[in-house]
Image (cartoon, rainbow, N blue to C red; front, side, top):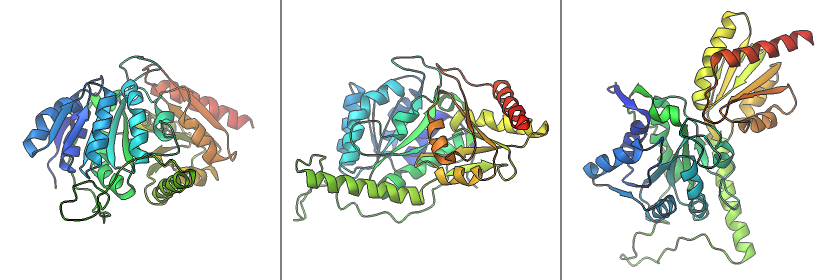
Length: 356
């Protein structure tokens, strides 16, 4: 059994990335993720890697593009406004079919906003974010251990589908401390990197990485190829947790930090005699539509809880597809929803269901 060590979330992500073979980090400071580049600045030289603080987020993501093009395992991290600045580069990386890891410890917005935790970057993360037709695979961990496990598997997943993978955290997960184990991910058979620009010294034909296709038919085919890889990810990579959903009348849907609060609400509601369950998407892209649709066959109502004014709730409504009412409770600006407030909303929904 691996040794359990106490880690802050940001530092745990960084250590997990190093253990997964990441040897290059390019970034720029922003709260609340600053411990990631700080840790990488110390740790990467110890394993022969390179840490570089770029002059801006725009520069950092383009350095990621360059390193990824050589087949190296590379990552960057930031928080909401910084991720917005990286969006052009993320689109270029997706268009060039390059694997990399991007970590977003979300803070409140819009604009500069504040430094407290939020989940208001959901749309940006799961709907592409930058220009063009593409998606990224996005994990939404709810604990430091899960953040470690998903980070260690993210590099393999990125290389399997040749696309960026994002860890969608928040200021709570980045700053809190929990004991973790660094466990090796389940081995995958990875495709050869016969696209990497490693030099043609052996006499092979030169390789070219770009994302420009001036002929419409070529770009059409290219985009379909990218889309097909994401379709494969939909079949193979969807992850979610379901708790007490078999007999639930009311099902909470939440991810990340908010799901931790909802779990205590579920326990409190069950103790009060209310049949409440929980669905926690772990991949928010691809989204667990089928898992939610299955529960919607028997549930009487859903309550989506987010640290936003309502973003994931739109995907929940698509999944439920009118089979049951989908309610929403959200907070914004860095305010964390309380168990008491969510419980009050659950009780309100339960009373409404009794009156039907």
